[in-house]
Image (cartoon, rainbow, N blue to C red; front, side):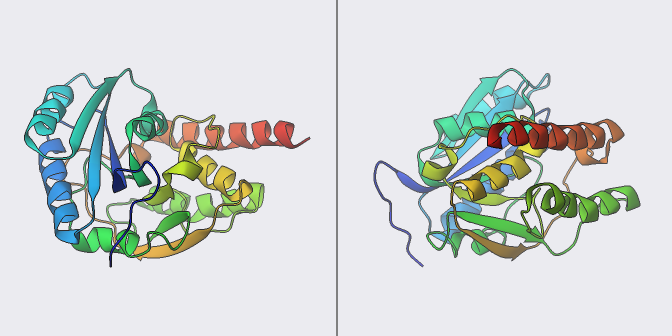
Length: 240
C-alpha cells in the first residue's frame, strides 16, 4: 500500500520515542524500529526525545542519530511521556505522528495495523488484545480506565492508553494540558471534539525487554487518575 505525502510533509510517518532512563534497551529498540519501518516500505522518521534521563540514554540516542538514516535525537528536562511526545510532535515532519515505547522492539507486523490504515482516518487507535506482563491490579486498571474515559467524556474506545497514530496537522491544532499518561486520553478527547475521524486497529502487545513498567507503580496510577480528573474539570470550565 502506498502512502502519499501532502503539503509540507517530508515523510508519511514520524515515530516519536520518549526515553527516560532507557540505556539498557534503547539501542536495540531503535534499531528494530528503524528496520521494521524500512521493511514496511513507508517513508518514515524516528524522533527520540531524551526526557531528562540521568543515565546514558542521551548519548546513546545521539549516537544512533548520527549512524542511522532518518533518526533524530533531542534532549529536554523531564516532562513525562506526554510532555516528551508533545516535544517530539514539534520536531516531527511526517503527515502522521505515532508514539512508540522506548522499551519495545518493533517488527513490520507490529506496525502494519497502523501503516495499512494511514489516510483512512485522522486517528488510528491501537487496541491491545491482551495485556502482557500486567499484574492483577494493572489488569483491573486497564479494564476500568477506558470505561472511566467513556463516563467522563463520552468517548467510547476499547483502548485509550496505547499506541495511536495521529494526523499531525490535526494534532498540532489541539491544546493539551496534561504531560503524563493522561495526555493520551486528553488528545483523543480533544481530537474528537475538533471533528477528527477515528478507526480502531487490533494490535499485539509485547513483553518489555527490560526494566519495570511505570504503570505498575501505585504513584503513577494515582497521578494518572488525578490528571484525568484535572482534565475533566478543565474541560468543564472551557465548555461553560
